[in-house]
Image (tube, rainbow, N blue to C red; front, side, top):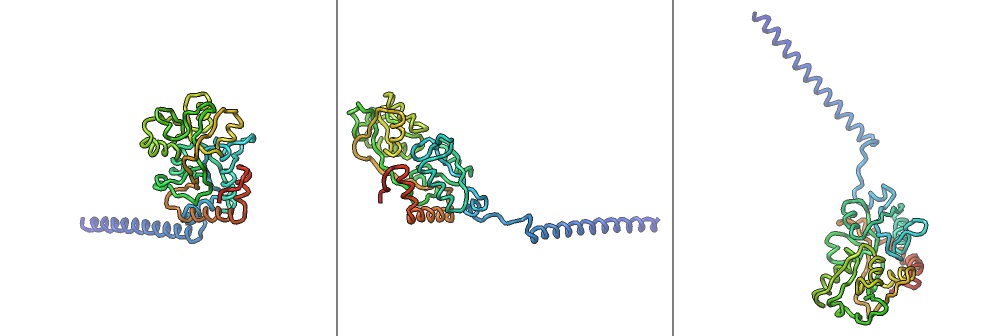
Length: 287
């Protein structure tokens, strides 16, 4: 009886020993295989360390813009993105050594799309503000726009911001102009109604039809729309403010911001920026 028991014990120990050896061998082989893959470099390339490198590695920068804001960004007769912003984007991409891919959507959706990484940058007349800089990084300004009050041709009652009291004023949804009306003008002037729009032409149609009393915008944006649609509207008074637009990217992107600034500076130094500006606005940019 004792001899049989000892034999069974020995067999059990041998079984466990064999199992342990097999497991160790499998682990060693697995480790060696993983190391070989990494050492040989084919399958385990290190990811790009920052967003500039990621863009260059992909060979394309995805740029968001409204696509409805002449002469800054719009779809031309060939259904291609065109305008001042589009030309700036193409030239910046060229200087980064990549292609540009345009993504058009309403202005209010651009920042969420950038934050969710559906875009790499926004080049759509996004005004640089302290509030936006809390959530986004910006390049140096690439244009300065003067904003004026716009009314119907036969309206002589509104010439200053103080005349907004009791009126209905149209403005782009999610724009710096909307923030300006709500945070600065309303508290100073008194109660008036703010009606928001997803695009400029809708606000001008309502102004022309008398559904709103006034809007605010810059003259560069208004001229092509007024010329194309024959709206009976006019700008009044002195500019109420000036805005500077920059290229917006996700927060904490110093390498990408530096590359964008280098591209913009190079464009201004070699005259490319002036050529683009004159193409769309028929004048030299303000110094």
